[in-house]
Length: 75
Image 1: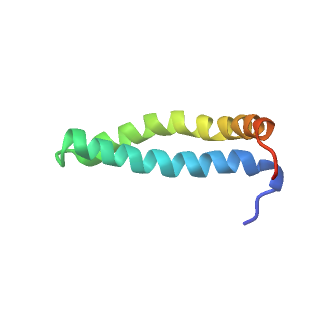
Image 2: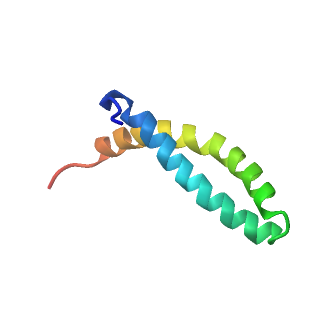
């Protein structure tokens, strides 16, 4: 399946936000909750993290890219 290039930023946000929130929520849930009921706690925490990570990973990179482009130059 191919996705139109105009959706590249949104797709990047979903993939990056998904992977990031998946890993971080798993590690933090394990550290803070231990192994008892890990899966239930982790899935809940992942959904919360995912709802924050996807919009951040979608909208922040273009803004940061523009700011960096303004303050850098080719040498």
